[in-house]
Image 1 (cartoon, helix red, strand yellow):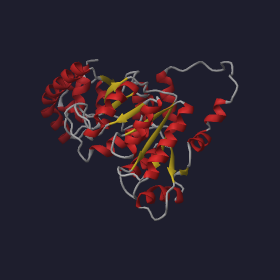
Image 2: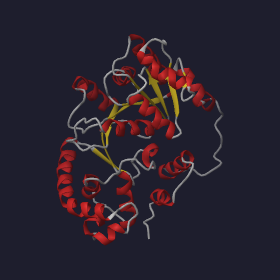
Image 3: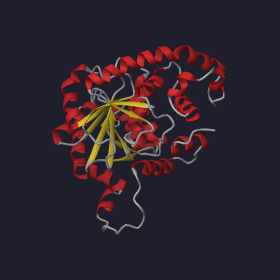
Image 4: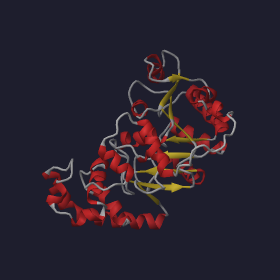
Length: 338
């Protein structure tokens, strides 16, 4: 498949991940879109007549935009991760809303044994910073990769402490790789490329627009085996991430705070409403995730054949979804629609 066309299909206006995957599944490849007719497109579920016309009018410009993106990728040694390729993160691969293309700079394994997402307020208290650092340091014992969003506050604290303790950490960005936001995290981001990585679904020239951050938050939730909330108001990005995690059948943890602190209201409410486990340390997380129990189990002789990364991704997806529509199964097995 052509990398140029894989990128270009993500550049077409008003075509999101679900529609793009449906197009690819029905036409057989991204390249086929550039020779498809309006009749071909409207035969695809989710593609209305007006959408088909928009695609036809924008696809050549999208290809030009993809050529610019490709030049940036080659110049800056950016890795591209296409959703049907084996190197695409398996935790993310089979969510319906997962990006068709990801852009990555870094050295970390995107399929580690254990991942934890840590999110919270951009204006943490001293208590919040201390608790975050303590949890990150404690998670090192369990070989956990830390996922966060490189924002001010708790995100920055979790990444910085991970780098200090030699843990891999992934920053999921709400903008392109030609910038760092906030700019004060430039040095930290450079260290993260060597001790983890930077991951985004957005093209290199994408700005940190407000609407990008909920999209970023869904990736944090999907990449994480569980998500920790350290200080948050009742509303905001952290609560959105927790909501995504819950929808993805991931565990949510929350650090409790003082009842009269605004930035404790979010975690405390999650705990009170039984939407999050209350935790005080990394040991609490390990207990709920059963890591110690799993680590202490004796090594068993092989009973079942080992699964490939792709096969394991399919098993993970089926386990995390109560229902499996036929279109999703086609994407899962890479079967073109007839």
